[in-house]
Length: 144
Image 1: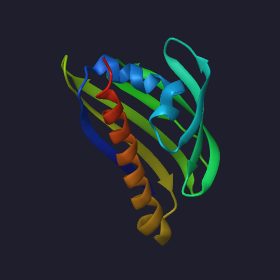
Image 2: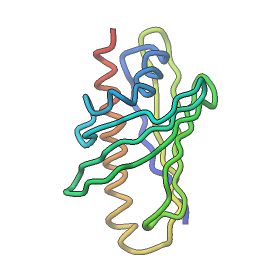
Image 3: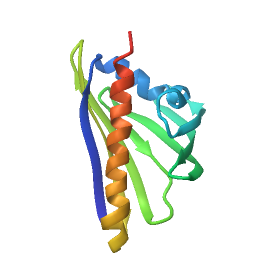
Image 4: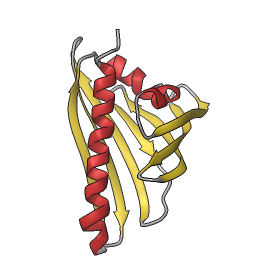
């Protein structure tokens, strides 16, 4: 079964500043409450491989991920599969003007169809994706 979890909002900055914020992985622990540490393992012109140390709901774990520039308006996100998910991928999308950016983050989750996925884990992930995107929008409001 495939589930799409997506949240869209606006940020009070131009798209290039939001793009830079998203790519500033080293700064994530400054504004994402669940991120206790973040580091870039490798950075090229079109890709970033990084790891964040997550501490949320009493769980602590390292989560490797990569960002790949698809276009000036999209960043592909690759995340590890495992646990209840056979495939996990994501996408940042943004467009806007010199003062505002409409942007979204989505996760595509491939998983088995269990009742606890539908009634517990997917609603929890929807809430977390919403909070994740709102954190970026809030932080973007401080970008000069």
